[in-house]
Length: 139
Image (cartoon, rainbow, N blue to C red; front, side, top):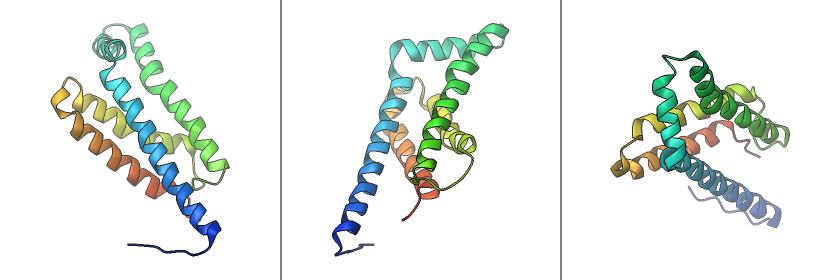
């Protein structure tokens, strides 16, 4: 579908939305690849994942580093997008859960499968686009 608008303000608005989507996808991809491929963080994630079941303190560390802290950071960022009018009104924490749950799953699905990295990125970008379609405010 091609939308053609002649008003300069409308053209600027469309370009801002496209730019936001591009920046959002790029940011999501870079962060995902960091957690997937960075030697230190990926080994830490694997170690904490395995050891969390035998050590309560390690379990708490795993949940804090790879779940709670990330969800809180995303909640804060999403709340800013809601407050600025870029995203629809909603519970920012639930929106963070909606976004991060698939990212978390993709990390484990594609962990230790470097040959499938392109598939992981395609899945991530589809998810981010769908997420934007649901939560981004259409003005």
